[in-house]
Length: 115
Image (cartoon, rainbow, N blue to C red; front, side, top):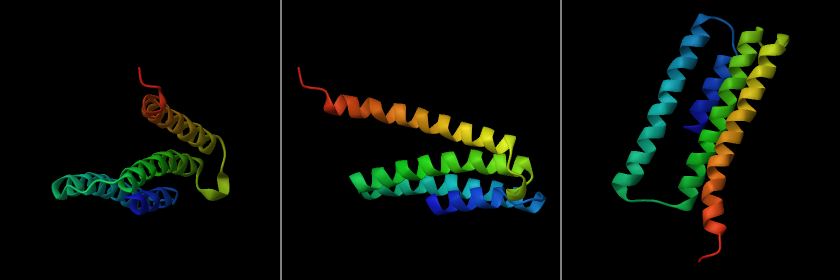
């Protein structure tokens, strides 16, 4: 999922209709892989902290790479980075902040003293 998501972000920065279609297809493949690995783990009853970590890390990375890539594409590519790229970076930071806040709820519960 992580590699396909990063590939989708990279392709999204390229100009042209074919790149946009390829990025959309790669994003759909990323979603399919994300669903499949979780279902496979549940079916095989294989759970681990490493698996949870990798799943969350893949979400964090791809969910921040895609808005940045979209901003680069909207600016016209790597040679013309400007306002839209900045907005993509801002969206990426906001997405990370939302994800971090959600994760910190679990951390706070785990680290709270028992009553």
